[in-house]
Image (tube, rainbow, N blue to C red; front, side, top):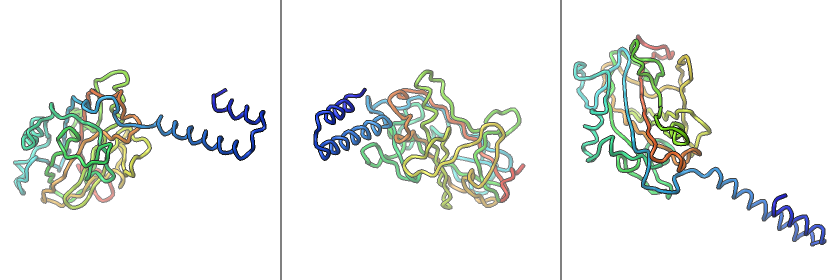
Length: 270
């Protein structure tokens, strides 16, 4: 029997007035509620200077779709099928950092545009907080761009996945990240791998296991034929996620993003 239950029973036996007993029961209930809230509290608590400190990125696109870190207009030869870590590091040079130096300390957001830390202070990208870079996508025909778990080319095995080589409790890091997409035309989406209960009012989606199915819910942004579109991609670990706790500090995180174009009926374009 718990301590507070024994106290209540002893007061009943000693005929303590009902009003006093009622007040104590309410007080005990509040303590119980507070303990429940504390038990689901996320964020890093032990060392706020150690986040996810080993990060790999890989971005690839399917047929009829190309990408670049720069706007090359309609010169398709200047666009590529794969964005490498070296290309992202070239972009990060303007922040005097690179992927090896990026530490993902927890932040949170409601819309994938403004990010804050545990104290509610706004955080800037690529500065001990979250990774953010811009890509330019171009397509040879109108399409909706989706993430896909399928390979963008046969036997490439470059479909979307989030993984880690960390073991034990650190392996839970794959449940903490979010990837946000904000296109210059206003389209936006947040991908939450291993999606749980949404936090902080976020509207997120996950990708199915097994056979990939495309729907309006998995749309990221729309492209008009031969019009390069700037897309801001943000990667963060969300401090509001229940599994974003001290156990996943210093973990390794690998993020592979595969993109595919679909028509208005969400059928892949080949």
